[in-house]
Image (cartoon, one colour):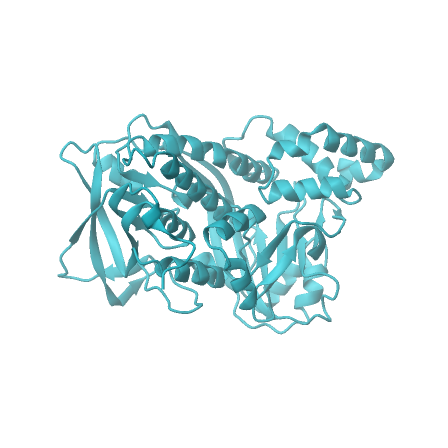
Length: 479
């Protein structure tokens, strides 16, 4: 049965067929948007998509801790009414960032209080399952899984993308990069009015565009050499009676290690430890516990040293923040779009990726609604990339700015980064005592407010007042 909150027959139709490459969170959100504006939408996915809540090979980071920020949850709730209640029914946990998280940062704990900054804590496979089920229930959306796109199809003058070449996989042969295309199976041509690349950080769009005579987008990289390790434990509320989650943030310049514990469905905890610049957590039991013991506070160690582990320790590494500047291209083919991590891949420690993808999906929705009466796609890529770059700028500046606090991080540093970091350190120390500063910090972190909110006269006055009243907490040499 078609979801009652979708009614594409009442929406302007921009074309007969749209293709979305990649069915992770970005691809699913894009397919949901396009289903209102195209007669048919085809998702192409190289994995075999599970029918239940399962980890899949194409999302290796799916075994690690994920955070859907408040802004991202708001957008998903608009696209999929009832999603949050269904997640909670399946065991997800309502989580108040200001009240339920015991966060140690800059030498102290953030003050805790009830707030309206409530999100939902759950595993990545559970969230993806619920979103995927809703998208694939749409009558005009189909998914071709276990398929790879081998190249783009273009008009004779290469000015317009007209579809893709794809090949079915040999289900029995797999590699770390995915299944191997079946030998002897001919490529298939799939025509479309719009093709969207939502294949993630490993996107082949730059190479494909180059083969069609277009320049590659310029890239910005900020090298962090991050490694993190995760493990799932059985919840035991006797070990954590007053809060739902615990976070310990590293204290640069000397500290490079941090950790986070949050609840998952099924009465479980997930613990993820991260280390910058090669100071990575190990995968052996003793080393994992010792890494926990080495953090600035023993909070997580005291829990996991007594909790029952339910999984092996899994590792993941990320060399850098990576941003592709499609907005800087003067030439780009019509009928093609790149979204999500294929544009910008952030340090995952800051939890911004899924929310930025949701913002991009919302941007695409607004463009299609605005141009509905025109019923064509001229200028989509130009307009989208220009606005997406503005949406990315704040989270990118926050993420790489925080990373540049670690000596040895390499890349192009945004202007005034050191000065901003110095001030934000004072904000963090003000959050030990001041609720308003704490609330504003979490609003910025959850992307419901712009970073400029931290520089408002109201917050600056609170920082100055606490600096004068509690000077010992603002002496840099103590940290």
